[in-house]
Length: 308
Ligand code: NAP
Image (cartoon, rainbow, N blue to C red; front, side):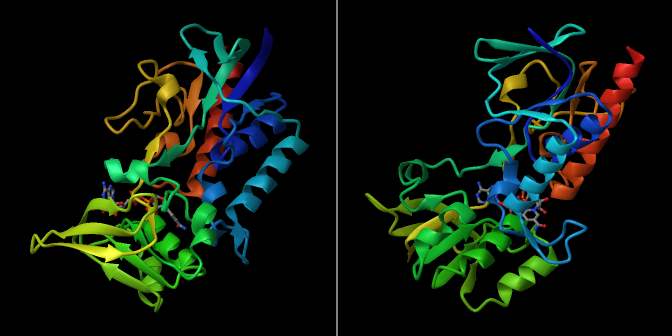
């Protein structure tokens, strides 16, 4: 069995920063990046708030640069999905199907995935007008009418981005207040192609073969109405990717890994196992905070290795 000092699961900004720091500490990290590597940045358009880039950089470009930097210092990458972990003992075992890897420390940076509404019509019409990825699917809605559901930064960002293609974008939110930052709300409000529909609960995505509309209920008046449109983009938050670690690693009620103890700010309840990025952060969820916690995980793992 291949033996390592450090294995990193996940290769978004958190995992890649852990890889850069631990490679520079000569720990020869193995990054198991998953088939959908890169995390949320891979479906982000322009990143304008990552320090160091006075001109916006795209999410995929930023990830590509981070990956190159990690490789330059000797990090190795494996493009596969981890299928199982055994974390009971001092030595942790990570499985990729039948292949097992032994490691003294494990860093979990598996990120979070987009939430869905959980209604039948949404599942049935997924990929037929319903999408959870504006950057992936926006192109298909040139000169069409679409909506974005949500009231956070993602909803504002995606609504604004989608006006590049769509002729009209409804931003549908279930309240009057937004979680999004003021600057992003203003950008959306100032865009003549965007119309806000507030206090609106989604009852159904309308359409047989493809999306033809959305049925909403006004929370105040109780009235239902249908908006005719061609596409529905979901931007209603994320769920941490912790399925692999269920009942092994302690999480909070939303499923985010709980970190922080005598082994460091990124240490989990299992000695030698650390977590960083969106998988342990329900509050900030920024590329820069994920990268920062990735750095902490590398330093915590390094210290732990010295101690054992
Ligand atoms: P979020 O801030 O959690 O917002 C999710 C939105 O979806 C909320 O407005 C919520 O409504 C709504 N929602 C949740 N479940 C819903 C449901 N079942 N039906 C209808 N609406 C529902 O998520 P996010 O926008 O993805 O942002 C996550 C984090 O990433 C945030 O920290 C954000 O700042 C960050 N982010 C930053 C940028 C940037 O700076 N460029 C871009 C994107 C995201 P309620 O408000 O009523 O709960």
